Image (cartoon, rainbow, N blue to C red; front, side, top):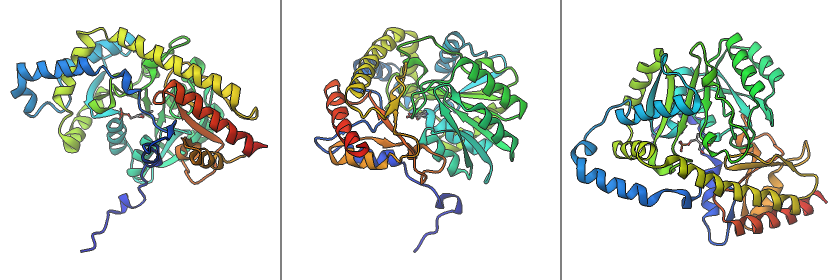
Length: 395
Ligand SMILES: Cc1ncc(COP(=O)(O)O)c(C=O)c1O
């Protein structure tokens, strides 16, 4: 029987990055295409020891249905952590555990975005969340992002148009650009959202991966009137396979999220929530973060140096102070796709900036490079090959 898909799902696109990663898995390829943390950074032994102990002590509870809003100990330890690290106040907010940042975006879109609503996003932005907004019929409006953050004039212009139902932002070590919004820019974005009465979804998976510079306040810490939803996960700091993320929501929204979670997947895995709670409270999580920051600093440093030595001088980029990505830019008006294709033919996988745009069919001059997954040697070798192709293309 030919089964008809719902009209909502007809326009859904798969992630181009997931397709690229299949190519990158072929032997001999060097991949700057992924977004995963270095598997060497996973605290595998610590996790496996705690999984075994948890099962020995409490297998019945761990294998039973859990609580939709999250394992209470983890909810409490995360609230304490966020109050301390991010200055988030829980007097008027609640925290719900969700299955990674991706589910935070999915449920937010489900609850706040009606079919045809406009959603403001940075341009470029993380394609997984863009796809979540698209899946609920959101019409994406891109606001260009540079090393200071979103272009405030264009943001205001977009806010003055038709009603916006959500503003999605990744202010710190943004995926894909690696840019971080300045303090002034953060304040201005929040003030504009207030003036035009728009809720903000702030995404901060990379904030703890700062290896240089001063920490900047989250938009959530500036939120005086309950308009910021704040999402994060352990995917980049512990391991993405745990699928443990969290969303801080203003209290009036909490019940709606709890109900949405129940209908999505009932609850996230209790075993891994317990392990995350233990790692946060009974282990030196901060020392672990220091180790992975040092690892990524070294890799970022190597990539930046190789880019200086080998890329065509017309190519520009901003060396990030944390996170997992550098975006390199060809001269304005040039499409990066031919260079992405040429590099792939030489065995180097990268992602074209167009994949992260509100309109993915429009040309873009950026290429996202990930430095967490490849080894130092692969970084050197891959950037050299990319450099050769850049000279060929820009000659
Ligand atoms: C900006 C951003 N948000 C959300 C996610 C989703 O991560 P996860 O669902 O693993 O927490 C990612 C993953 O790469 C990301 O880069």
